[in-house]
Length: 311
Image (cartoon, rainbow, N blue to C red; front, top):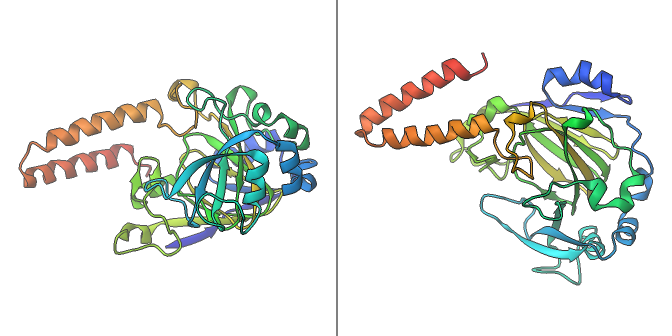
């Protein structure tokens, strides 16, 4: 396994410099030096609890420090924002769902998550004036802005998004491990998520291809901004009580994206059609004896590799 540190750029990067120097490389960059505004000294647990008040929020609640979306080792619960902040910022709580040291994670949602995207500006208006979000994209390309708040020592599953995004760290530190899209075949995917929960101590007998990945790592300090290009896998772990905002935007023409996608994680429409065709192809191959099925499957894989893989 090869490990690289994510390249870091110091300085207040404007839109033009981002588009000219960073964007075309299609790889992650850690940007330090942007003036995020008053949030940097205001957004502590007490302040957020006062401002958020009784607004109800839907949470992930976990009794383990590595959340796994595939096996769902967490539960969805709802709390007033003030109570959520108090619990998430503590290491142990008198009031809890399962146990005193359970952990909490908020990924903010639209008012109707099935129909509305998350928009920090609309869902948390009392916090808007506190932060100066960088805009590295054209306004028309904006998709969503997601408030993320996590208990310390809580890790989120490895996954990819179909849109470009910036992860803006405001309070606490966050460790992020990324994998290139070209490592997709080594990550044992189920949908858009990796089945490998413990990326630091993986079971290589169960997941031998994972030993071949190249990983890119960084720790976001308060004020840091991580650019994550579309299709790059990322695994995020809060080292402390953590507050950040994700901003997603469309890198491609709108026609590529599923209009029903409110989370930004549905496969691009041509890819979705290709997956449906592949499912039919696999079903057709299943009609053959095993040795013939193996032969023609290898031919298909070779054809896809020769015609579609980046050289």
